[in-house]
Structures are given as C-alpha cells and as structure tokens.
Image 1 (cartoon, helix red, strand yellow):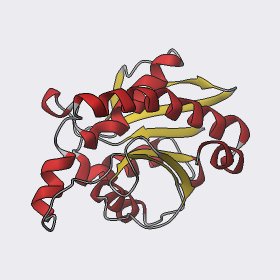
Image 2 (cartoon, helix red, strand yellow):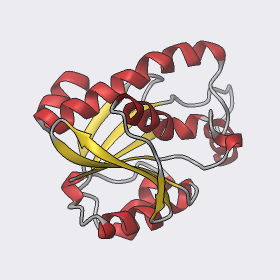
Image 3 (cartoon, one colour):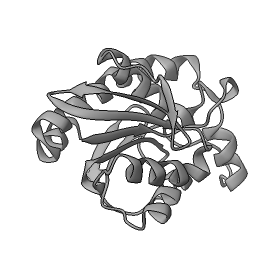
Length: 190
C-alpha cells in the first residue's frame, strides 16, 4: 500500500497559495484516478482506491503546514505504511517555477512541513516530489518575513499558466513512480 500526500494549509483562504501546490497536485491526481477525499482520518482528508494495480491512500493533512508530521505519523501507523511507500508532494523555493524533482530521503531543505514529517516519523527515508515555486525577487536581501509572505501568496497570472501545465505532469510522475519505480520516474521527470 502507498500513502500519497500533498502538503498545504486547510481553508479557502489558502487554496491557491504557492505553499498549497501539494494539495492542488494530489487533488488533481486523485480526481483522475476516480478517488474522492471522502473521509477524515489521522487529522487529514483521506481517499482510498487503486492505482496501477495497487492499493493507495491519498491524504491532505489538516494540521496546517508546519505541523504536517502530526497527521502523517498517524496515517503511517493507521495504514501500516513503510517509509519507502510514503510519497510527499510539496512546494520548493529552491526549484525554478514549474520544475519537478523526485528523490528519496534527504533533509528538509528549510521546508517546515517536511521538517515536521521527519521529526514525527523519526526518519527521512520517504519519497518526495518537489514542485518548484521559485523564490521572491528583490533588489535587497530577502528576509524570513518576505519568504513567508511569498509562499502564502497566490500565483500571479503568468505563473498560473506554467503551474497549470505542471499539475498533470506531477500526476504522470506519480503514476510512473508507482508503476515503474523511483529510478525510472527520476530519469523521466527530473
């Protein structure tokens, strides 16, 4: 069984924020697979079904980004998921807008949601699908407050066109990851 989760913040006010690209991508992929988020478990909206012949749980933690690990650890225990079968989709400031990267393990890269997951799981050997949102540009040094404001802002109209093309590509990458494995997915989508 695989657990595929998108990171984001619950609530309509956050729905189109850069930080919520994980929610957007997991929503799109689940819908394409005919799976609805029709239950609440482990502090998350959850949907279950079959993808590429295997059982899959889709989840969107409802704990807010910085506490995502609380939800993820509950879901991992409830569904008896190995860390190698956990796929986390999240935004990444260090990737250019619209780029995606797959990898297993590693640090949080400063992402507080991923940091929370690593802390609560006591391990980092899970799969990450990072979606580039770029960094804020400024003629002066960018502060932590600037970063927070940036990730909690909506995509600009020109950025939305790029993101609209990336969302289905993320779904294709997840499908490849599930059906062909990490190496094949990395070779095709990184």
